[in-house]
Image 1 (cartoon, rainbow, N blue to C red):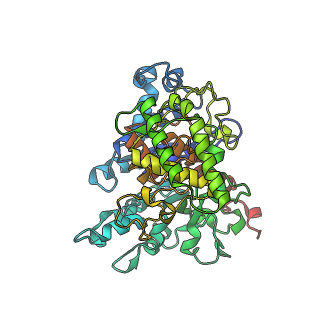
Image 2: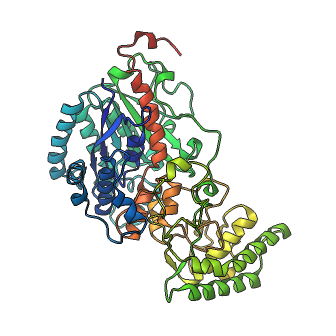
Image 3: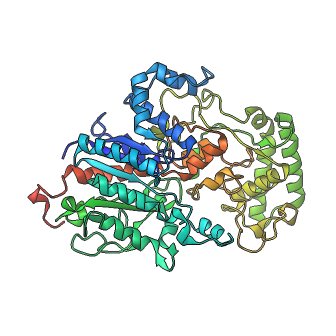
Length: 529
């Protein structure tokens, strides 16, 4: 067993898992996990991955041209192949734009898996997660409404089998598989998907060839080496319990090859330690430069001031809902909005520089987010909204300031109710949802690309939904992590990602296990905890 591991990343998205694993260091600079292969079908996510892979080839000393571009010193993206051709070609070889499950992809991936095995032997790791649309509660709800929809014919239910196929070919020391919580209750023809997934993973190379490990289980006796497999619910990771500013609940399965897991006491298996501190939206967003929302029509600073002034007059005429103390906080929020309207209007819709904002790096996780050479924030530009939505956003943010929670549909005045037939049905009670300052955010999903209604900024003065960069902060992507494609594609990438900081902590737990070499050759580690 070597001290470096080759990592294969399937269904990579924009690279959240890969960023976490590749960021781990032994000592000062040495990276034990090297990303050798990433596979992603979406073209914009592939371009994001390709650029990040290229930068990793510089091992921390990234080219000046990258920061010149991010900082706005040059307008066009540099030609990376001309700056460092060998590194760019290596990145192109590492990051493949392929549709997993197709014959074309199998031929290429099998060749690359053979290469990784020859280079690293047993020292390999498999990470990734199949697409989740077929498993998620929202996706299943949409599918019910589709005429003639048959789950058994939805290939997305079975894309995990391609992950299992690669697992069988690679035979890594450890694998990590991530998916949505809805996978636990998803079924085809009455058969639970998750039970089948667990069986396939556990027995991929013969009976009990991999031991499935729950990183943060709720039940007792979960990871006993002589006991049964953990209960399905034990594989759910609640990100907010591990220092992530987001209540993101996902299924994460870690599998250890049987010869590494043999005789290993439960206390030495990979596990995530829960953290006492709760990281909030305020911790990661409060210091960022203020930006105004955009207008869908006739946008500009004066047009925005006029629209916001109209919204404030309407909200003052309606008044606050609830007790006098809440009413006072609500009106105070509107007063602050009115006092700062000129400043926010002139701040613009995009962050060009951080020079005037010395407090921009968050006090929590500062070293993780901020590169020393970064003077601006990429992907930090607001989208446009219609005037009626500005009124709703302003009300919702002011309400949250006063009540400490996001308003439900029944909290909205009739004058602000959208023309939705099911507005008061209870099915979409939080159609307009504020991410409150002093709590972790709700789960960032790809739906943020649609309209932003679920992701309203907590500051009423800015009156807008979150930018791509703010969503990326909540997902714990470093500030110099650039997302390619148009803004809608960038939002989708961020929403589909695994938080890199969570991936980093998973990687660290796996590395601490691997440093022991399992218990194969260490009799002194075989004693009980």
